[in-house]
Image (cartoon, rainbow, N blue to C red; front, side, top):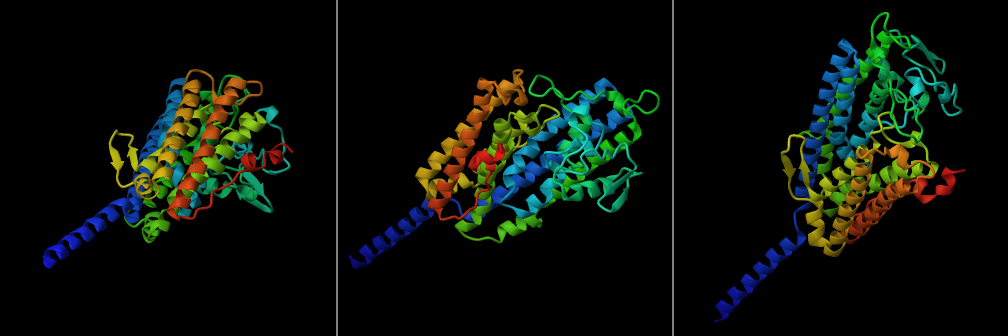
Length: 423
């Protein structure tokens, strides 16, 4: 009888151990693996999109017509969703943030690159290279150094990135290419995007605005660089990649900090604050993310889609296949169920509000019109997304506090001290 009771006790302990293991949900290392696998898939899709853009840009430069320009613009817009979904990997992964500026730096002073409208102005107190116009000038003086810009190639463009240590001197990446395809959006908060003519790239007598050969060389070099730089970001997540290796060395619940740091900082300081609230406070279209193409609503929307994919541990690739596995959501549900349930609801709510914004823009009112002064309904649509992002951030903070994971979320004066923005 004693042996029988001992066996029952042993079975009970074993059952308790199993129950305890189940209560913990997936192991942090398994969550990290899914997180890294999804990153690799997202960046791989971004590279594929950039290569498709590269092909359309090459075709446009070979035969610059309205039709081939339209194809190149469509390819640029089509390349954005995959990359925007990766932005949840910033902030928590240093290797990613170190490279991010080469592909998505923003905002940019476009006068550094090419001709601009007289309304743009001729100088800026913050940027001595505000109208340097590399395309028109084969020699550029940066500080005491004269840069030979006779040949426009990758080396030159990289040397001009953040020239004079001014962040707005963006010479490469998606937004430099965007400007070269669309030109300036001179419509303010009215309807219409940039309208650069295809003839800006015609070689010979049909060239408009001069320097068409140099403009073509710039667009070609910038597009080729985007493919290369995105490839470098994808490589961070390969089996022996720098970001994956650094992540997988971490242990325990605290190893999940990069995931929640990235989600919190993108939600709050970056997207909710710098990319959305700032422009809404100022009613300034110059503060919108994809300002030349009027594609901002898509960029914001897919940032949010990407954050939810990271939380869910499930990413639907561009080809329709799915990468999924043990998720931050599953880990939180097992270890902080109340907070996890609330946070999941907040992710859904944010995506719903973003979909309203996207649908409104797809229906004809661009994001720069939504943030225009006097557009109370449009302003509210944008503010609703901001409010949802702030609530989502608070949900992330509550969840990690219960999990015992410490994170630091990036702030933004636009949200934390709006009075500073309007001074």
